[in-house]
Amino acid sequence: MSVMYLLVPLALVVVALAVAAYVWAARQGQFDDLKTPAMRMLHDDDETRVVSRESREPDPPAHDSRLTPHD
Image (cartoon, rainbow, N blue to C red; front, side):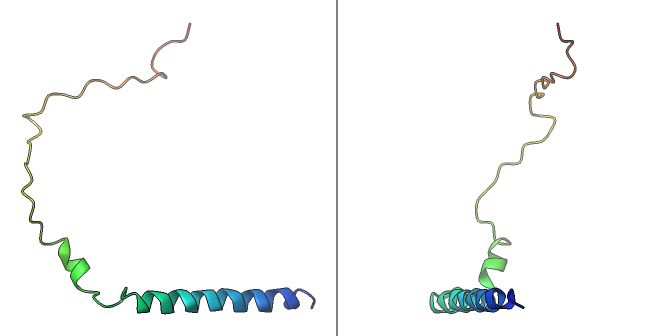
């Protein structure tokens, strides 16, 4: 029963912090526009250069220490 004296106030503090974080975010305008950020990724204005795999130089072989014998 004595653990309740610790858990109830701790739970109330956590809830108060969560409510304060929500109120702060709402006042800062975090929830004003929920649609535009999701649509922004669909409208890529930058021209990206597509490089085919055949036109690239081959990658150098990776060195793996597990494949070489140890002296």
